[in-house]
Image (cartoon, rainbow, N blue to C red; front, side, top):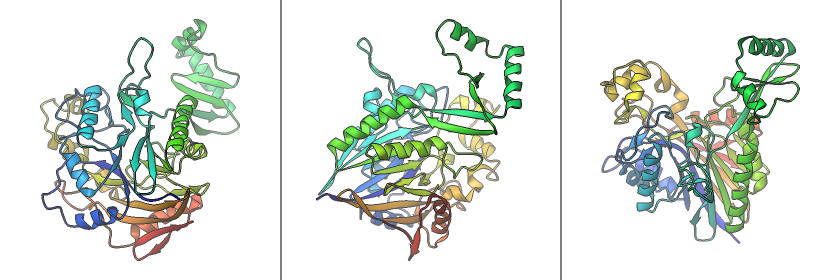
Length: 431
């Protein structure tokens, strides 16, 4: 008989130290987390003392904080982290490997990044009183150079993250398809691709499919977009899940994914839904999603939960201490710009961007019990990150004092077939 309790939270983009004696609401958050044996958080920051150089491509803000931030996260009680996200390589391989070193020095269990692909894609294990819990970390939002590489018989692999690539296909009616084909022909837009096909380095497109300067178009009867997870990545991830299934009682998959369907950031992309289902089919017990910095609905698939996004747990992007010259030059500011001035320009002195989007600043912690392979109940604790506070203090969580967040999450979850009951400011999903 195996039984354990698990609680999962969303992104921690943490750039400020905790006050020495905590803050108002800290003790209540920590007390709730302490009720559970496995306590998960997504670490969306690199932690080092400028031990890597800024990458040419960042995840948005170049994300770095001093390693002591990790000590503060431990004060909340977390004992499991995902490190695969769009900021993992903001400071190149040096920053990634330094972050890993600082995590290991503090005996902090993590998954999702590593010295090579085998390391990055392997599970980490948490031992509880009556069960062993495995977790894999995955990310779908990243630059190609962020993905870890395999070893060969001659060379070591490349440090990086456990990436999930996906293929986007734009389905178009015949008139649009013919227009694109004609434009490609007249402008020679695809000359390099056609040359690669001729020389055997690329495959020719099948009938009814068009390559157009990096995008794929499919002849169809109507106009729409589909996304599908990469087969090779799915095979690697599912293989790791199956191995973890052999070695543990329960398997979690943490996935960082910003992509969404259509124009609604709360609607998961098609490939993420397919990925989540395939992971559960392979043996995963729960999918813990994060990335878009706001809540998404909860789906129960084969009696297993898919949290498409738990939103933010800590969100302090506006108080990052340093940024490279690239950040300033990308927005036509001189490289002598200071961080505070850059942030003020970016959000137009607090009038645009994340700072005025209510959904960014409210989320949940999801706690559940698993026993003999089955879920008993999910409890959703709403948290508030205090949108109205000044830049210097915004972004740390406390328990929300009303049901607004839960009612909103219930609306998002209902189309996925999930009903959330609200009782005494806690959301409950029964099995």
